[in-house]
Length: 412
Image 1 (cartoon, rainbow, N blue to C red):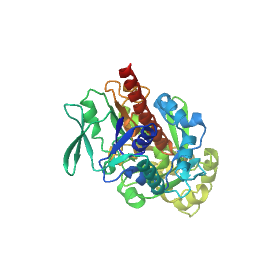
Image 2 (tube, rainbow, N blue to C red):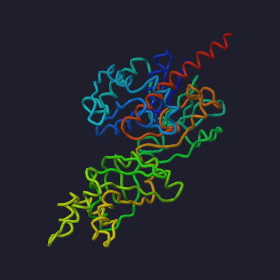
Image 3 (tube, rainbow, N blue to C red):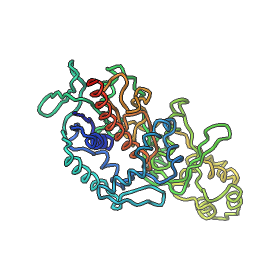
Image 4 (tube, helix red, strand yellow):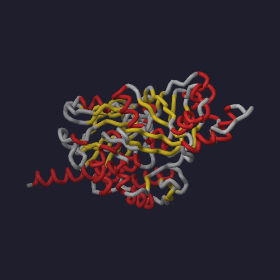
């Protein structure tokens, strides 16, 4: 029983582990010179494996795909992931935000331990093998430095990532290959991405690269409906990016797609209400500059003051009530999401509707899909990796289960 895994990210490696543990001979192929490249880069600033928030809230992070992700996480969720890491000799801790990290914060030790265990289990790795589809006999075709190669497999797990960070291997080259076999693919879109704003030259030159801290984004999602998202973000040359922007990026992207424009509202002073700000800003400033007055009375300075001047008119700046309202709900108009290749992750891909409960493509028996190439998305915070691990495990185990049932059917 031979199973071929194509893609050496977290989903592919977990599929290899699950299939090998179930008794299959596993060969894993990757286009890059080594596996786990995006995984290593994602962990460069501290590997966020998963999150400790309650199950219902955790599942809500998957939005419209909650129903499809829920059973996968029921089999391999945050607690199972932490136990799995411990089995690799990697202890974890919970940060103040509820995020779970390895104690040394690094991805490399975990990946090294994992690869050692996979090799010991008999998993064979084949790097610099780029999958280019099937030949007429149904064998898998790869390009290598030594020319083209064909491979026969009893079952295949595709874990090829989305379309973000193509330099690390997730280049979406699989999309036309599957579409050529009659599969409808939901268009790939940037997720956890930044947005273009269209700064003035003065603001861009002065503030690009600076963080905007202790703020909140107010999302207005319907008549009278609001959600409040505290955090921080970064001013870029073209717009905005970073933690709290990523948390609401799916809604903003969809708004841009549907309407051509999207507006987020910034609360630049989350610890104060409008009446207090109005009262403080109404105090006489005497000979002090407006910049000094803002700093003393509202604790608004630097990039926050720059944002106000970028958006608020001179007339409203001179009116304490209007200025206070702007500080509490500064409208920032977004022009476009940043390109897919810059995004942290990808929305769109292989629809769950095209798959069975084992994540096998219904119209292509023996072909399973896992990870980011599936049509789901989630914000950063451990949700992406958790679902990648869970889908990989389900696909690897599902491939073995399918092969065993097929074998039983033939014997019968």
